[in-house]
Structure formats: C-alpha cells, structure tokens
Image (cartoon, rainbow, N blue to C red; front, side, top):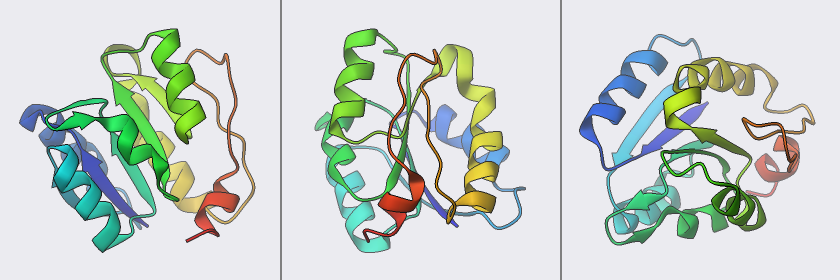
Length: 140
C-alpha cells in the first residue's frame, strides 16, 4: 500500500516517516509540502492513502480532498467546522495532531490489511462517520 505524506513541517514529515517506514506492506511516497506539489503527487503517483495537513502554502488542504484516494486529515485545526468541511469534501478520517498523532501508524496498518474490505471511518471525536474504503479504492 502506498502512502503519500502532505505537510509543510519537516519535523512532522520526519516523525511520520519514522513511524510508518517500519510497517510491513507500506511504501511511503512524497512528501509534498504545498498544494501544487500535493496535487501533482496525487495525480502522478495515485497513492492508496494520503496523510494530509490542512494549512499548507499555496492554499487549503481541502483542495486535495477532492481525489478518489483515501485521505486521513491530520491537523492542528481540529475544530468542528473544519471537520465537517473535510468530511463533506471527501476526508475519511479527521485527526487532531496534538491528540491523535500516535494513532496514525495503527490506522495505516489497519488500512493496509483491510483496504479491500468495506469499512466505516469515524473522526477522532467519534462524532461522524464517513465513506467505505472499498468504494474509494475501487473508484480509481
């Protein structure tokens, strides 16, 4: 399973890489640090999963949500209005960097082993559910 990391913080990218590289069956691509790079990387590499920050140079990460890729939003802006907007735009998970960062490897591993099975995803707060991974994965 390929995972594209999109964040403008080199420290966040480095930490995510340290956490995800040891996972079996996971191949990291990217990273992308701004909206033009992110859109180009999604288009060219067609990743299975994107881990996406919302606040990026060149625009909002919400722009990237309009892909058929499974998207995990990982943001410092974990406000209900952003969560709602992200789910409406196509996010599969919405995580708070300050509270949920350590959950990312477990979620990626779970996706890696269950990508072809129907699942419902929930926000970190459990307030909403969203799309089936199978429907997005099959739409590419």
